[in-house]
Amino acid sequence: MRFFVVPATAFITTFLALSPALARPDAPSPILTTPDARDTLSYAQPQIARVTHVDLNLTVDFRTKTIGGTAALDILAAPEAQEIVLDDNRLVISKITDSAGRALSYTVGAHDDYKGAPLTVEIGQARRIIVTYRSGPDASALGWLAPALTAGKKKPYLYTQGQSINNRSWIPTQDSPGIRQSWTAKITVPSDLVAVMSGERLTPKGVPAGRGRHSYRFRMDHNVPPYLIALAVGDLAFRPLGPRTGVYTEPSMLERAARELSDTEKMVDTAEKLYGPYRWGRYDILVLPPSFPYGGMENPTLTFATPTIITGDKSNVDVIAHELAHSWSGNLVTNATWSDIWLNEGFTTYFENRIDEAVYGQARGATLADLSWDNLQRDLKEAKPDQTRLHGDPEGTYGELDYNKGATFLRTIEVAVGRPRWDAYLSSYFDRHAFQPQTTAGFLADLRANLIKGDKDLEARLDLDKWAYRSGLPANAIHIRSATLSKIDETLERVNAGAAAASVDTSRWSTQEWLRFLNGLPRKQTLARLAEFDRDLHLSSSNNPYVRSAWLVLAAQNRYEPAVASMTEFLPRVGRGLLIFPVYRALADQGDWGRTIARRIYANARANYHPTVVTTLDKLLGEKAGS
Image (cartoon, rainbow, N blue to C red):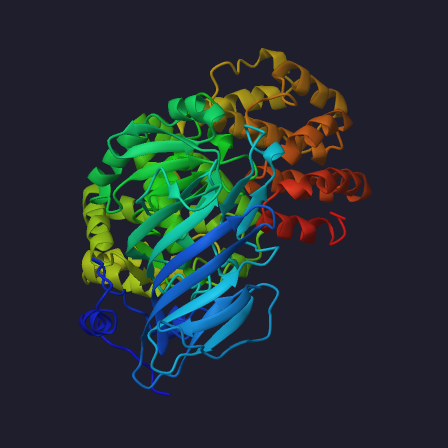
């Protein structure tokens, strides 16, 4: 069959002709057709037939832990195309019809444990299809929380996590970042709960939908990668933070969250001054229950955030700066495949650092950049060579290398060309490629055309291809050093030489200073020394989850039994992978002693975690760990 590849202007004309009733500002985004833009984690064949818009009409059922209803898909296809291939992960499909209600034949192919299965629909001349379905009981995107796992302890909670390929477990579409789609939704929930989504909230108070139920409507007019379609349902309250910013969370957490996030409007203003207009309307934050597996998720208009950043001193709101920065790098310009996720995370980590520096000062920016360098060195040491390439196997980069090697690459370019020239280039880059997918090769081509412009000396100094395609860290990498952390290093020298833990004044330490100190302690410690640290620095009882996690790793590495009670309390109530995975791994590395403890804790904690976290820990601790 002939591939269907047309320029952007043809997309506009063709789509409007196919769907005259649908009015929205964004024409379909282009599909990249170079070999490196082929998404091996999706079954879709977008050059032949692609989804351009998703319209959801779904009901959330907490009793069965399913979401069900219809998804209407608008399709752009070659004239001779007879089928469209969607991504499916154990959806329970009742029927598929065209817009007139005529049944369409479909098949679900062989299931892969990670990718799911191809859902092939015989569309004929249909260019809008309606899938009637419900999610499976173990949908990987859906986090169902019993009331006991929420702050209020009275009402259940649901949240979704789409990245990277989980949304195919609750939305039948082409689940690939390179196939950008607009969407609309009607979500029906119990009337005592509130639904929010990653789009414009058309009915923020909901409308009656029959006995004991309310419906909420949402709209995202811009084309987004489908992993950014996100939903949460719970006992939610809202407080404005500024003219276009605000926070949603459970009522009992609202005051603390609003105080911690009070600089959000300032962050949006700062980001715009750096790299151009914020194009998504509102920027709100949803602070979720502790089981949320990430620090934050950059869902458009509504960042999902972990409560572990609410530490009372704003030292961890760099997470919000990061998710906000994704509004440009990731949401606006998106990696076409998961082989190039550094185009999201590396750009965003660099941009996040610039926001932090502008809002909180150069010292804060340097501290965060220096810690990023520490994490990069850690990952480079632990990873296999092939896991250290920016462009590599999909989801094959080790640890946080996409973030920190990517950010170091961009910082190295900044230093080489100067900040004013670099900032002007980045602003123009985001504008040129707005609402489009991108590849590493595409970025390098743009860089050469619009920044390097034939300057052979600059090209040689930057070593672009080595950064993008080779293992390890090029010799020209820039390391920003923090004066704040240098003082911590001096304290570490004293302590490591034998100074008493009680001599260390931690009263004004930020999270970053704590992490530099704890991670800088030698991994081998005597039990007496660990007891001293624990007693004098109050580590096992720390209310800062970052501090607690770093301490528990050190404790596990030394089989420090008195910290096991702290692990038993901490690990079940925190679902953020960044904080719990290192503790479980440290325990698992200790043979029978640690594995016995890890499995016992995990058996009680497993039901509290998001399915993506469960998958990781099941593999780490053995398939029967949670039984």
